[in-house]
Amino acid sequence: MSRQYIRYEIENGVATVTLDNPPANALSSALLEELDQVIEELGRKAEAKAVVITGAGKIFAAGADIKEIADIDSAKRGQQLTARGQAIMNRIERMNKPIVAALNGLFCLGGGLELAMACHLRIAGDRVRLGLPEITLGIMPGFGGTQRLPRLVGTAKALELILTGDRIKAEEGREIGLVNEVVSDAEVLNRARAVAKKIAGMGQVAVRAALTAVMEGQMQSLASGLELESKLFGSLCETADMKEGLTAFLQKRPAKFQDA
Image 1 (tube, rainbow, N blue to C red):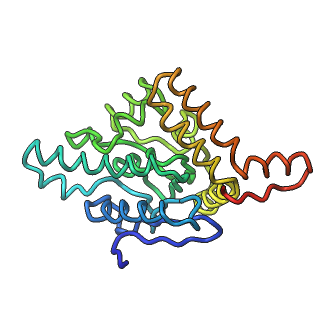
Image 2: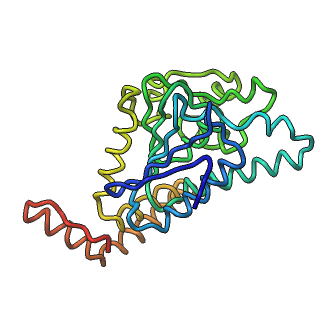
Image 3: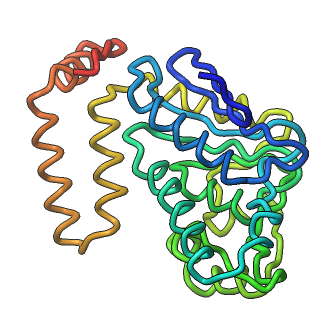
């Protein structure tokens, strides 16, 4: 299928998805629709066991398409735009395969950061600046930023970043829990792929169960989350991968998972 703004390749179990909407990889409606299609497609591809999302050029993504937002003239249209964006971010967050954001280049701002926060892990280049600057435009984050940022960094820090529109360095992002790791900009994509490849080498039944336990469990009460964890753990006890993993450990050899 021909796409204008998104491309991907699969190698060693890892699908690398690249945003390509120069000059700043703005998250236009057209780009987001293509991204939604790609994520749905990769969810069905057995050869793609983990996903990396990165940006072409010198910017991961500088936010939503400002020209599109400027054309909005009613509350209804604004709500429709954000509801669609949220639905796409939700698909990414609920993906049954791990998604690693490789935050390359100079900026990961606004909708770009909202996309990154919807991913399961975030590897940042040391030059990238992170932020939700919507407030400086007289608007607010609308693709999930007001909900995911507090869950990642805490309410006080999230409010500080959202209400001031300040941009922070990658290292501060790591310190507050917004990103998992900071590496040189030249190595960010390779590092993200390495992390994704490592996860792709695990038994995928267990990976999917763990993702489900964490992502769904945090939206529930502790008691419900623990019940979900127990149920999923029990389901793994009947898998060939569990038997292989434990046998390999006892025999002191690498496990050969069959994803079953």
